[in-house]
Image 1 (tube, rainbow, N blue to C red):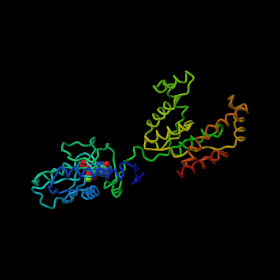
Image 2 (image 1 turned 120 degrees about the vertical axis):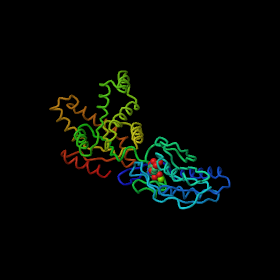
Image 3 (image 1 turned 30 degrees about the horizontal axis):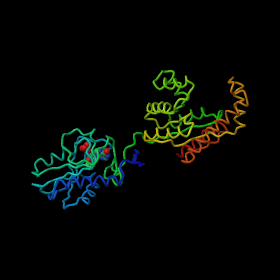
Image 4 (image 1 turned 60 degrees about the vertical axis):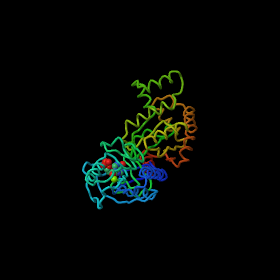
Amino acid sequence: MVKLHDLYFKPFVSEQKLDAIVQKMANDVAADLGDEVPVFIGILNGSFMVVSDFVKKYPKPCEVTFIKLASYEGVKSTEDIQRLIGLTQDLTGRTVVILEDIIDTGNTLEEVHRIFKNENVKQLLIATLFYKPEAYNKDFKLHYVGMEIPNKFIVGYGLDYDGLGRDLPAVYQLKTTQHMTNLVLFGPPGAGKGTQADFLKEKYDLVHISTGDVFRFNIKNKTALGMLAKSFIDKGELVPDQVTIDMLNKEVEKNADAKGFIFDGFPRTNAQAKALDQLMETKDSQINAMVALEVDDEVLVQRLLKRGETSGRADDADESIIRNRIKEYYKKTAILKDYYAEQNKYFGVDGVGSIEEITVRLSAAIDKL
Ligand code: IMP
Ligand code: MG
């Protein structure tokens, strides 16, 4: 991943792939031009890198020159093209090949055609390394296209974001979600997970996704996924992971601008943890940490018994039931602890102390992510 100014970019086209694409373009142009000596014209600034590699790979004699046009501000193309350096040689009767790093709206290309209107060249060919068909709104023919790409902002290999990134030897694409902090929150019964989730949500502006709540919401509102889940529950079967993941996906998409998520109640198995990783990857994001509140069994038992005195919850009144729930919790989470620890993403936080003390410990772990 690459950060330029305020934005994050992910790997998109590797050096090796660029090399192969440029090689193919050079071969294709050479094959079409026969023995003619072309004039390659790079459009500065962006094209300097592709032009340099292209002419080195061009298997026959050629001339190289540049013109300098500018149209971009930040990550948005503007209508207004400025001619900063124009043509400096007579091109009458010559075969001219424009070498572009990228063709986006086609505004720059329109200006190039304007420049060549009265130059009496033999032919004007357009070659571009990258081409965004969804953004292109002109009719000029593109004779050579290295790679068609989606309408997303890219940097590297000559292309910049506000001046930065031109020097990168590979190409990176703007991430669809920017930097997120995604946590998987764990804690044995009685550890105060709910209280801490509320605090984390506030402090880090995260969206709390409790799988239990998501299920209840979908079933109550009779969503397609809710009905599907219910059909398994009614048969006494486990809801397949994919159904749960699809529900979580909907929650994540509902909150696409979130600074991150707290997953609560999911994952519970290795397979689910992997599925969650894959889900986050489709969002150009990742799980950053499993945060687990650690509380000694005896303390938990005492807390829950005390809660049982006032809450009236039957499962909080019986010590052996409590101990069993705690044992179950450790049995289930041990696998996940290993899964995340292997990726250095497990953060155990001492859950004994006042609410404020615990929140301070949690914050310390999260601030380091
Ligand atoms: P146009 O919209 O086709 O005129 O593209 C104008 C110029 O915008 C290109 O020559 C690039 O300098 C720049 N540009 C277009 N798309 C991108 C991109 O994804 N990253 C960086 N620069 C871009
Ligand atoms: Mg350019």
